[in-house]
Length: 514
Image 1 (cartoon, rainbow, N blue to C red):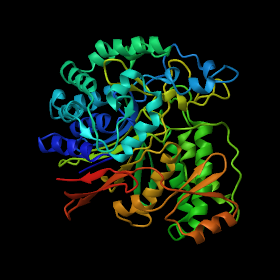
Image 2: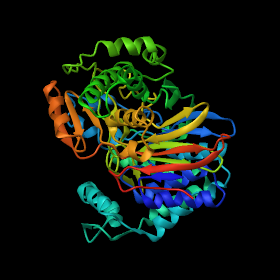
Image 3: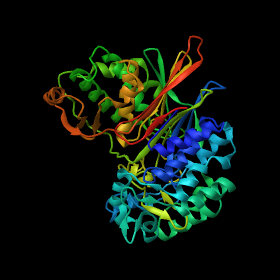
Image 4: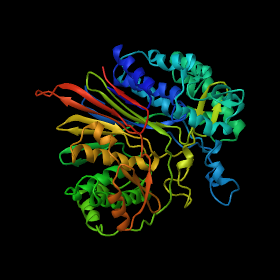
């Protein structure tokens, strides 16, 4: 089963599975194909967060590819009173070490069944031969086109005009880069020709990322963090990711299980819970080797219950943040499970739409703008852009276990909404006993700092007005996230019977099995 944000990426994963590859092989093929067909969202120049389940060892692991902040970074250029400090947060100075390629190799080397050079065939073919672009991709190209270099416009436009819906996008230089990666391995990216091209481009653009940062990058395996919810164990990425607030939300919502799904009481409780969890993230997020969050306290039943009990069910609270933070909505998520029961749930991104909007000349590779999502005030806080320290990612790939076996896997893009969307899906699955399709499609709410509650149109006008009556600053929104997920079904003897997958109807992705 594969569910991804683009049908061609889903098919790429299924192709690898049909050739005898496992979920880890397929994950590399899906991620690299998304680089081609969803180029504004993720790719070789990006970073991400991956949860895996190894069926042979019955082990859950978290793979961090968010990389470290470039050693030459001068974060003072990203804060006032530096002229253009906001622009510096979006462009070349915001480019951080791209870690996705190292993560792909880490999965392939430790868990893969197929040869590394076989995994990029779908991506190479689609980049070299082209594909018809969707209205969604055409919209994003047109929106970003004025910021593209002449080199970039040669791929994404014709005669100075951006490509339109139904026209073919051919990315020949990107195909060449993937061919080099397939045949020469990750050395070409981090210590070879591609790495040198990235270094040179950063010199031209006056960015901080250097060849030394690329050479020092490595994907890191960590033990996931989890919480029990009604007998289900919900696992997500541990620090250095900042996914733990999703578990805080679940833990606090255990105290509000009597409310009808998406009723005013239910959504009011979740809105108040999510404010507390958002505050906790801003307060406690940190590098686990420098300032680890006190998760043994934050996720304890006593602490969660104590904080739930102070919620006023008649009136919304005022959010007073310990700091400020923003995040990208321009991300992608996919899930894949194989015949042996291995699972990958991966969130990958470039940061903003087309990242820094810098494409490395001669490679077709977009570079991220990861540092846009650091917290620059006060100076020196744990989420500041501190040279050489880990970049803290807010991605929330999730795997749910039941009685020692994987039960579901899911995740979503959506910036600050990620850690709010995921627990709502988990609650839908466990507490409200929905199918994976229903759980993902069901309308959601999200808190937007400092005081807005965004409410999807599927939630009734009566509930919307009642939330306003309790003091919430409610606003309608068309869509929250673009989630992908799967559930595992077992027979009476505990063997895998089948998978159920779902792609979010808010996007244009595809869930498909074979």
